[in-house]
Length: 147
Image (cartoon, rainbow, N blue to C red):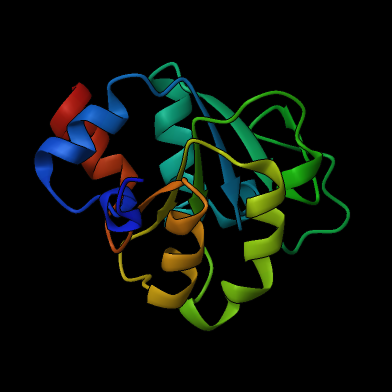
């Protein structure tokens, strides 16, 4: 049995390999267009402009039914179809409340944005076979590895 730590991705090679096949990204904690200029809106907007399918999963904005022109889901597990990555914009202390939802969906990878790190949550996800990136900006890494 492989060591679960192999699912913790923290090298340029590992990130490049993960991003090479990413086409569909759910964004947990995405913000609406009202928050344009903030990373939780701008990162997914840039990825969408580069051809990535974005699936919004806001934590706030209960009135929002669409963000970036895409249907909003309230839980990651409710998103139909497979997910390559769930990009997480939540404070580290708020992440444990989302782990069961993430485990229920079983995306290929979970990405904690720059400044976000929760080792206990990362371990739970990695032990379940989900790849985890912590404390990295998906937009920056996408530009580095995919152009």
